[in-house]
Image (cartoon, rainbow, N blue to C red; front, side, top):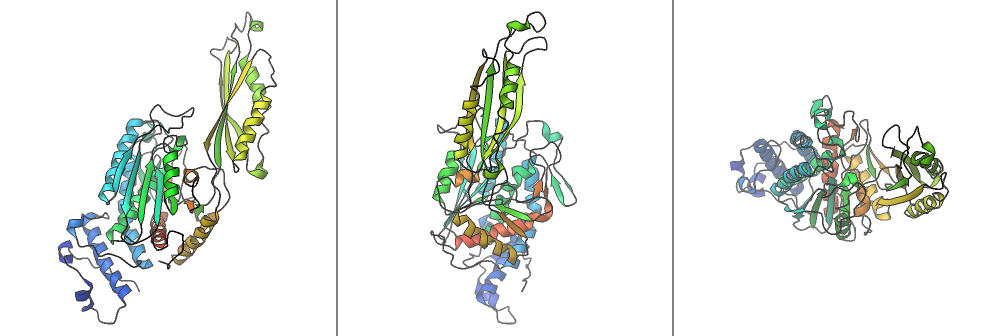
Length: 480
């Protein structure tokens, strides 16, 4: 039965209890439905006064939800929360926060920290520490992390929610991709990857706060500012938090614009190989024979290392960037090429590095010097038994709300922070709790699909309710 959301002034809710409300019923109501009606009143009042965000605790008496909220109530709350989430998306998109843009990252981190604090979290701003894993593209000072802990009120399990606030875009590109809404799409720089993930976390927590849900041990949120450069400052923190929690939900995008919603239990490991050639310069017209052409040697090296991929084991090695030379009429004294490396097995990192080191001994120009730098930037995420078990329950929840949901248990080439979260735990780690969208890492229009927002909020909220009811071993008490 769908219960109407009564729109009463907040002041009229003071001292609200089940007993006087029960006297208003015209037919017997179960305690569960009666509690749901109280929750509906509270939620409607909060939304009427705040436009979709939680009111301060002093403004209303929150009814504690010791039992799960009926599905139709969660769906109604998510629908009312969506306009507020769109405003949050606009606010986040309009702060440019490229991975090397320290000023922009500080601005957006401050906004996110304040929002989490308003939701009741114990918020800490974390700066890069001595455990920084420096790579070739690591900024001098990577962006901060925002961590918030929300204490539960009787539940048992601890859940970690992760997303990132940095983007791949340099400062100035917002003018090309400003926030706008057209039809069923919201466009904007970095909106799909991953500002929608940040906004989804904020508004699911706002939804749950509006009805007083605290049936969990603890919810921890970590928003990092360096995911797009392989998380040099946050990787160890993510691994540590992953080991301390009973489940990890990661909020990268949850599928393409046409659906279905997609969750991922496995992602690729990411590496980077860089070949550097040192030659000798000389006048290209008057004395080319005195030079050692670094570009020729680099071309030879790249061509003899073009067959390292093996799709049967999920190994990909692609040479993607190169540079050489100083001016047109000089034999180039140096050259460099980089390869993107993707693996499904950690041992393939070792194989690729060893094979490249062997092959660079075969040179075209004996006087050229060839060196290799190899980085293990991100480990693969494997589908674990715990993640598969959780995915089955998530598909049941999605089916109950009529949401088509696909679960992928093999990598598709992408890598995310979920792999760091899984590195030191046997607990379930699931990627893709964000909303559907398209256009990440492109100069074309990046967007999220509006009709996927509320359904995904419902799934995330009910997932947290489900996890809150299980014990630390993962045993489920009952369905939400």
